[in-house]
Length: 251
Image (cartoon, rainbow, N blue to C red):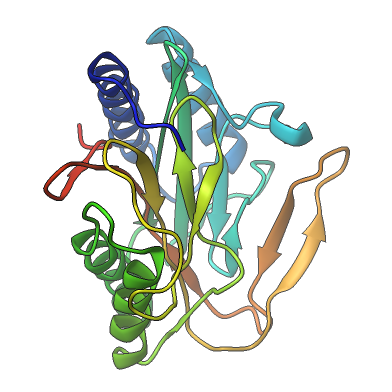
């Protein structure tokens, strides 16, 4: 990855803030009875109204402007006619392109009253992301991030998804390095100052292998937990600074 210039960092901040505000906007509509395609329309219209483009739309053939992953869907859920019901959890993953730069963030929401098990899993995913972000500093490694995430998740009795993770981001949607949710300290690519990555652990209730499904006319796949138990995820775009990190996807 090429380090960002001060002007490019400002543009990344603006893209990140818009992505964060998009999630805030969406949250008002998360309730039983809404269908996921309505969430897609809300994200699409809000993104365009703020002078940006939804990055997922058309990306490797992905047909929608946002990913909506409900309950056992780990990631890349395609909005459609699925109607949310009381007790569901849903991850909404938004990425906007503003002035040529990408802001990428996601959050898992509760639909009405959810089970204590769903609350605990979601809390684990949130804090696992924060544990990973705490490891971001110049010349730390992706293994440092993954080690911290996996250690925390394992202690909580859950399981990280190893095959899917974070990535470099900036002028492109997905760039090197791959940022895993497991690893060994000191292993993996070193984080370069003034580059951005995403930290996005996906946390499952069990360790069964996931199932992979094609999305018609797309190279993108979506994934469900092998036993259809719950999965939760959170994501921030993070800038590696000369001293530590800055979370870019805050409102």
